[in-house]
Length: 251
Ligand SMILES: Nc1ncnc2c1ncn2[C@@H]1O[C@H](COP(=O)(O)OP(=O)(O)O)[C@@H](O)[C@H]1O
Ligand SMILES: [Mg+2]
Image 1: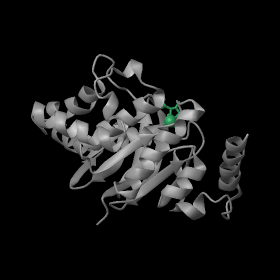
Image 2: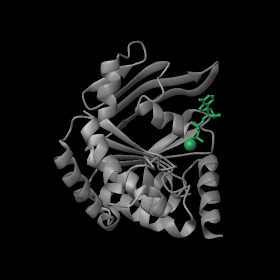
Image 3: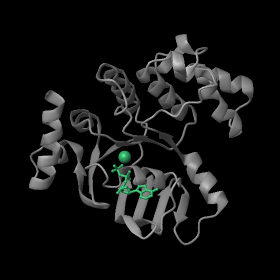
C-alpha cells in the first residue's frame, strides 16, 4: 500500500476548474517532484494534499487518513494536516518568535511535546540544518536561505509522514539557493518522504525518485525523474519545457 494515494482529484474555485482528474501514488521514503508551467495548478495541488484547499471531487489519502470530497469532517482535516507539513515559497515564519520558538511552538500547540521537550527537539533539528547558532535570533536577522531552512526544520520537527515543499528556493537570491537545496538533499538521503514543486530541474533530476508533469490542471506525464526530467523523453512538449529551464539556469 502506498503512503499517499490521490484518486480522481478535482478542484474548482468559483466556476473555474483548477485541477482535474489527478491520480497518483507516492511510496514511503521517496521524493516526488512536480514540475510544469506557472499557473498549471502545482500550488493548488500541494494545498489540497494539506486540505488548505478542499477537493471538489475525488480523494486524498495520506497514511491511514482518507479525505473524500463528499465528506470531509474537522477530524479528518486535523488528522490529514498532522500527516503532512508544508514548506512555503515565502517561508511564513512568525516574525515575533525566535528561530527556536518558530520550530518548537507548533509541537506545543499540537500537543506533541511539553515546552521543555519541544525546545530540546527544536534545537536538535536546528543542529541538523546547521542553524543552532541562530536559535535565539529573530527571522528578520536571518538571510532568506536561513529562514527557509528554519521553515524546513519546523516541518521536520513535526515528524509528519510527508513534507510538502512549494518552490522552496524561488524567493531566494541566487547565492542562497544552494544551502537550501543542500538541506533538502540531506533529508532525501535520510529517506524522508517529500513532495517537491520546483523549477530547479537539475536538482530535481538528481534527488527525486519520481516526477510528475502538470499542465493546465492535469497530469500530462509521470515516471522516473531521471527519465522524465532528462529533456529527452518522447514528448516534445515536456522536453521543450525542461530544456528551457536548463537554459535559463545556465544564463
Ligand atoms: N484562490 C484562487 N482563486 C481563483 N483562482 C485561483 C486561486 N488559486 C489559484 N487559482 C488559479 O488556479 C490556477 C493554478 O494556480 P496555481 O495552483 O497557483 O499554479 P502554479 O502553482 O502551478 O503556478 C491559476 O490559473 C490560478 O490563477
Ligand atoms: Mg505555485
